[in-house]
Length: 331
Image (tube, rainbow, N blue to C red; front, side, top):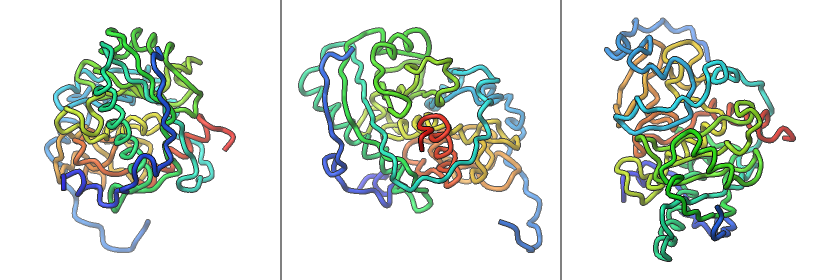
C-alpha cells in the first residue's frame, strides 16, 4: 500500500466506468466559550521573516492562481493586476447546493510535441482516468476524515490530442492565449484542462471565474504539468493533487497563504492564517500569531501531494457561492 493510498483513507475503489464517465476521444483537435484564555502564543521564527511578506513578494496580493514546485516560488506568474485579484474577495452568500448535485463536464486537451503512439495514448488515457478519480475523491471529501464534501463532481466527456511544439512548453502569455483560443470548448460551466510539459518550474495555473477575463472566456480553465497526474514522473508531485489545487482556483479559492497574516487571509474563516507557502510537509509549522497551525494539509497550500488531503467546509461554501455567482447563475 502506497503512502498516498494510506492518506486517502476513504478513497473510493470505483472504476472510471462505474463513475459513468462517458469518455469520448477526438483525434486531431487542435464558536465562543467562557474558558480562561490560553497563554500568549509565540510564532515560529518564520513570522519575523515573512509577516510582511518581504521574503515572498508575490504574497502582497492574491494575484496568482498557480502551483509551483519547491525552489520555484520566484517564478510564480502574476496572472492578475492587484486590484482585479482582490475585487472578489468577499462573495455574496448563496444557498448551499446539495453534495454531489453538480456534475461538471470536463474536457482534457493533451498537448504533445510529436504524434503519440498507440501505447503513449493508452498511457495518457489511463493517467487521465486515475486523475479524474483523484479529482472526484477530493471534491467528495473522501481523502481524509476532516475533508469536507462538496456539491461538485466531474465527468470526463472528451479527450483531444494536439501536436504543437510551442504549446507543449506553454507558460502564461500569448502562446497560452493562442492555444486556448484554438482548443477551448463549452462555456463557464465546462472545465477545460490543458496538459503539457509546461515550463518555469510550474505545476499548473488557473484563472478565477468570469469577471477577471475581460470577456475572453476562452482563457478560462486549468493548465497543468502532464506528468503531475497519477503515475507521472514528477517526484513528490505525481499524485494528482495539482489538478485539485488548480480547480480550487477555478472555483475562486485563493492560496491558504494569500495576504499572509493579514485579517482577510484567503477570505475563508476556517483556514488558519499562514504567512508563507509551505513546501514538503512541515508538521507543526506555525508562521502567524493567529490561532491554528499552518494548514499544510490543505489542497490550497504548496505542500507535496502526499501531504495535502482536504478542503474545509468554509472553502466548500466559497466554491458554492462562486459557482452560483459566476459560473451558473441559474442555480
